[in-house]
Image (cartoon, rainbow, N blue to C red; front, side, top):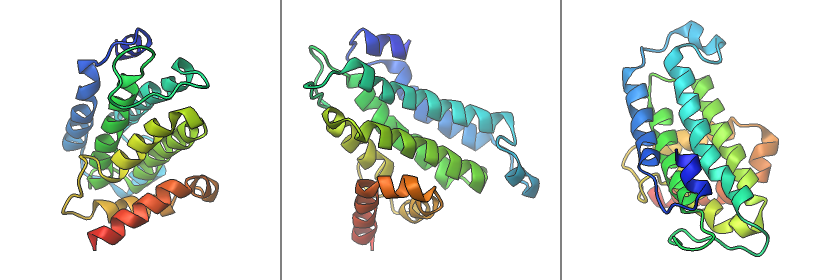
Length: 189
């Protein structure tokens, strides 16, 4: 339904806003991590559902590439014409989803890194389209500060650790993300 709303240029969709809530509840209901879980891509059905929440949310972001053309410049508050407002809302939601995942002791380190990697690959893909620079900026900002402000926890430290464990090519291609993360970490000290 959200994807249909995006393609019909609907300005918002309620289901989109449930995705962080779904991620939060999945994490809350997950069992404790066991040592053998690190050997499995999806050690539990809940782990797979977390992947699906991330993947679907990123699909709503990535569809902005297909719904815009060179010369278009979509903005976060644009709700008329050839807008992709739902993509911007999804870019905000992905930060909250990733925060729940990275902060949870019930998600394996391997899965945290994999799901962050999927989100970062989507960010890299959006950044490759100049017309989507505002969308990439919203996504980058929300991955670093999920609610638009710095939390008084160690989220930035954990995010940085997981970022440093990503593929070196991906990290090199996300220089703007690294700079923004370093700036946020410096301001948090």
